[in-house]
Length: 168
Image 1 (tube, one colour):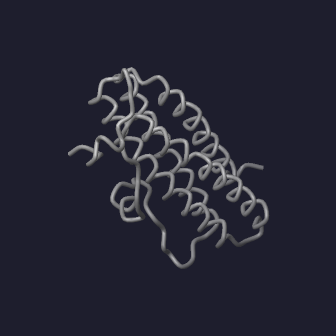
Image 2 (tube, rainbow, N blue to C red):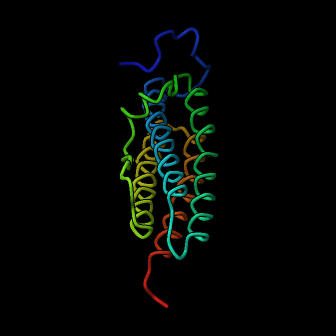
Image 3 (cartoon, rainbow, N blue to C red):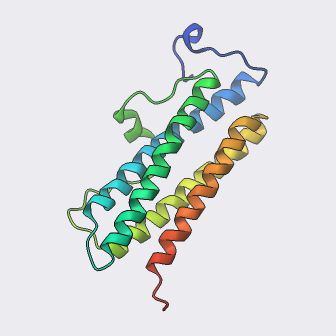
């Protein structure tokens, strides 16, 4: 199944192989779904944070959610620059996301932070896998974008991990 139904409307000139571009664009669509899912989950936890470290955690998650949101548009637009469609609906996000939702009414702060640390690791792993596909397709532009976002995801993981340590 190709990602576009009207090639004349979405086609973009490129010297990259079409099959490689399509593979990368499919990976970018999934990445956009993961970014949206992680953004909503991070905001969910930000809104529902409580406890003695409320202010610090609340601000940390707000900062992290803004960083995740800022990545969505460049990733989606890179897929379009490759000549393929990006996400069109919340339904597509639900079909493609690897980051699980959390509709639990009450989650402990520690559990929120450890869950988000694990989710950011999943996100980084997915981006590294997509980076490998970029290398196979000789798509250095997408690979370059991913490198920055991998670094951001790993940094978020580190910060979240450090907030849950019991070392004084």
